[in-house]
Amino acid sequence: MHGRLKVRPPDAARRRQREEKLRLYRSAMATLLEKRERGELDAEALALTGAVLAANPDVGTCWNLRRCALPPDPADWVPGELAFVGGCLGVNPKSYGAWHHRGWVLRRAPAPPPAPAERALCDRLLAADPRNFHAWEHRRALAAEEDPEAELAFAGALLSRDFSNFSAWHHRGRLLAPARTPASAGGGGGTLPAQRLQTELELVQNAVFTDPNDQSAWVYLRCILSRASPPPRILCVYVNREDAALAVTFSRPVTVGAGSSALTATVDGSALEGVWRSGEGRPRPSHTWLCDLPSDLAPARPRLHFRVTWEPDPAHREVTLLADENEAWWQEPVVARELFWAEVGVAEAGVLEAQVQMCRQLLELEPRSRGCLLTLVLLLSALDPLAHEEETRRCLRELQEADPLRSGFVADVASRAAAAVGVLRQEAGPDGARRLRLPRKALTSLPLLEHMVLVTHLELAGNSLGGLPPALGGLRRLQMLDVSHNKVTTLEGLPPLPRLEELRLDGNPITQASALAPLAACPRLARLRLAETPLAAAPEAAARLAQLLPHVDITLT
Image (cartoon, rainbow, N blue to C red; front, side, top):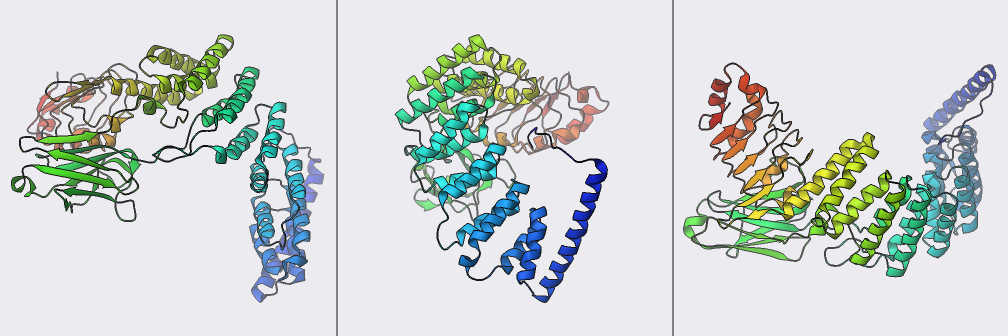
């Protein structure tokens, strides 16, 4: 149990014990099942279940039969059952069946059992194994009816003996959850009161300076600085007259349809009756949802006013498409601190800056502390991603070196940091074009596409992308996409991109023409570059591509 060696008897004696236990178990279970068939759930059945469960508390059938065999008046058996379950937990302190039965007994007790007795049981089990989550949950249920300060003191005492006790940190965080102030508009749990937050930050500081390489305190620090994930909200509404489609993009993937929250739209006050479909082209939660406009809508009413409502959010979004326009949109301004760490719940910059200084001081002593490096990256991005871009990159490089076993995770974190900076630096031209440049950023994933929906030119050359995500279907204005010199082998799953005119795939390990089949659904695609790909060197590649994409100018050299 968590590194504790078991003392076992000699092999011959252990074999005889096992055989005897097995014989008694089979005999008892056979009798029990026969009595169940005959409906004889009596005192003998109760005794038999007790014999089996006392040796092996994990036989769920016996717990079920025992509950049926108990007398009708709980006053006759509650104390005895609690004592019996306590003995079973001595055999297996993490028996799901025993803990479930104890909860069942307590819910039927004529009077609440003495809390000290239940707490003493938890203390005994936690002394044997501080990570027994069943005991922690039971103790947390007891604390719900009492002063949480006593439980906070209990968790603090355990942490003073061992800062790596993650269960105690978790217990402390759960106890503090009701103390969080209400979140502002947008929902989700808020932050801790200032005095309580300061107390927790001091506790964390003591822990991380004691053992900088233990992850428990770092996880707790990020939790107390966070709030619950904000609920999904509309980020952008885009309408295009030529495509005859309305696109709505959310901050998080949502499901629209039967049995889900309603997404509705009106055009000049009349309901838009179209069916919403995912922008990713598959029936699953998506950031972007599309609705086709009626074919006779544009000629009949050249000036169109759209109003979009998302049922969980009382606000509505409006877009007006003028007579001389082909497209129009509304987009929520980007909040820099939410791009990388959307759950950050501390609004006071001074609190975050103090934690940044603490992390910097600690890194001078322990430059390879993984928890410290990751926390510093989050804090810097929450304060100002652009101002701290270089320090963030340096911390991520050091984290990659310090934690090679999690290199993929670190690479994805670095991809999100780079994408966040790219979103903040995207360029808007006088012709309405928007360019987002992310070349040679070592991207392994393409996050934050929900904040790129109005981009027209996206440069991703020289990264490590293994494919193009279906969420690209939300980029309804995308005209040029440069994914040259990545690791793309297929475009399978890529949804139609209605405005895409040019795609660059030079230097990718694409070997089959069929890997490009989704491009046939891009109606405006005119130029495709495939130089330095295995496919370009294959015999008859040009003929196969011409048959697949007859109206596209394809460059193979």
